[in-house]
Image 1 (cartoon, helix red, strand yellow):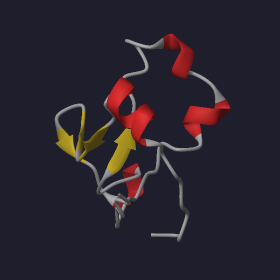
Image 2: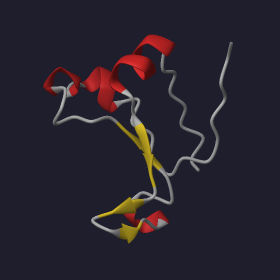
Image 3: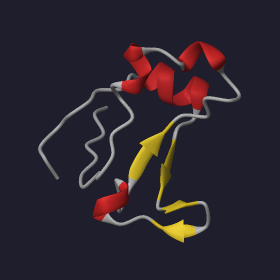
Image 4: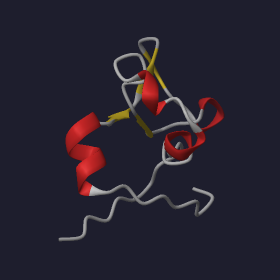
Length: 69
């Protein structure tokens, strides 16, 4: 919503399988709670993702996704 952009490689998506969340703790996310959509990684499953490199690609208030071949 604020025009922030992040680029994920196919390898990162395939390896870590980020999800696009629309709920947080069972409740729909609103703009106030960083929704309505948020791209997140399974950080508990892959502790090595807990770094600025990956945090910067967890886009909240997601509005568009462009997939390149």
